[in-house]
Image (tube, rainbow, N blue to C red; front, side, top):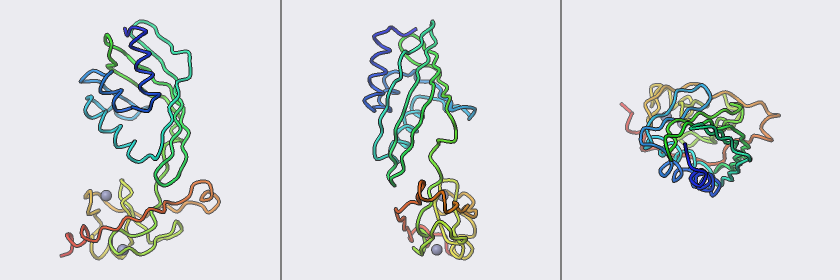
Length: 203
Ligand SMILES: [Zn+2]
Ligand SMILES: [Zn+2]
């Protein structure tokens, strides 16, 4: 079980928003992390990489531990509140319980319990990556891959043959966000334009 001093240092590291560093310092090499009932991520390097990827999409993060922290033997439960602001200006309020199993002074296993509805919503990007044409949120021409790479239907059908040139995944119609939801959950304004990627797939 972790010593009270180690546990406090871990919490302080997260509260200073050094999330990736906290994993490097306080998790075992083969630690696993699970979000609700999703498949666990395994291995400290993978956990750190994922953390950095998530944080790269954020303009700011504020992390708060809601005390008390519950400790019983090698099990620790921490209640967290995270306030994110994404690069395209969306605010995300997330509250979760982290259920941890420690091995000595390191976390070996962790499961997060949170309301999945607060996960960052789908990015509605404003344009086609191939031809740069506008694709407003109400467009029926917008198509996306699972990473939200965004293209217009004509480019997908003619140049791309239905596959994302970035990840190789399939491209499907992007769902439209109801107008009354757009005010609070606006579309992205960040244009992504990478015509060189599209040229590579032209026959
Ligand atoms: Zn296009
Ligand atoms: Zn893609």
